[in-house]
Length: 454
Image (cartoon, rainbow, N blue to C red; front, side):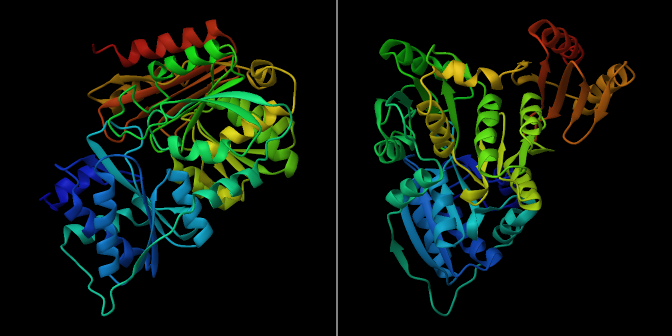
């Protein structure tokens, strides 16, 4: 049985979720206790629970349900689902929810993403620490009347709701879809089967061992198969989802990766047509093109830290209509401010179907700057390196510095951000310039400082 001492729990209770190796760090006994604590901390009278295709997920979800019912909450099991389908259930049914998934992590991992009713996120600053501490303290609530456990299928309602938000009409598209053996293998047929499209499925078989490639489309190696398939079948677009299908990456008709920042700008433009002047959120390592385009279209761009809890909190504060991140997470006010890879994909398909242009031409106006992508470096003394970078760059002509999230150095022609990882001895660099030469010059100078100790 997994130990519930604070050291082990601190290792697996992350900033936004619970995640660890099964069964060494996370097992059904621990899931049961987390379910019990979740009900106490949220005050839930009903909880909705879903899980992904990993071999360990059904047992963990069942145990969590037992702990929640013991605490007195009724439980609605929605079974196999994507994370954004769980968010839909939480919003549609107005219940707190728990999703068992480790997203793109390898097969030996699993985890729990939790939310309050209406898909409001639970993170370290909004209840996750309290849940952890109750488990560590051995506290267990036993209600006079245990909750009931029932099952409900929400997949069809989820698909209908997404297509209400982003209907696709116009020319018939050919769409290659790489589900990565993850949950898009369940949701894509239901959603995309309702639009006029010829879908070319890839790796739809639900398999938590990920036999073809990791279900992590932010890594270029995991997009190679999709890029080849798009070229092979002459598809109009390729869609790649991560393991729990809350993220989506696009490949254009040439087989070229579409930057999530470009997709953010496209969706922002579509949402601003619905509500002129609305706020659009972007994190601080999204391309500078996003706030430029939002402002030009009459919207109000708001910059925030990296991470879904910061995005969602800022969306709530500003009543933002939409938010996007560099990592392929896209957040929609009309989807309870939650992220949905499938809804983002539908926006892209809708924009493409409305024209007779190839995707690369549809997106060309939204691609303005050249980005480095995220570059990780192992650094023992992260604070010292950040201080050295600030000393070296802060006094230069035209430069502004801020500390919203790590160190950002901003110039009219370029910017870079360096952030420390929350969980590893890494510094993460993102840089962007007005052209490739500018970006490469800034990137290489910053990396030389970061990696000097090597």
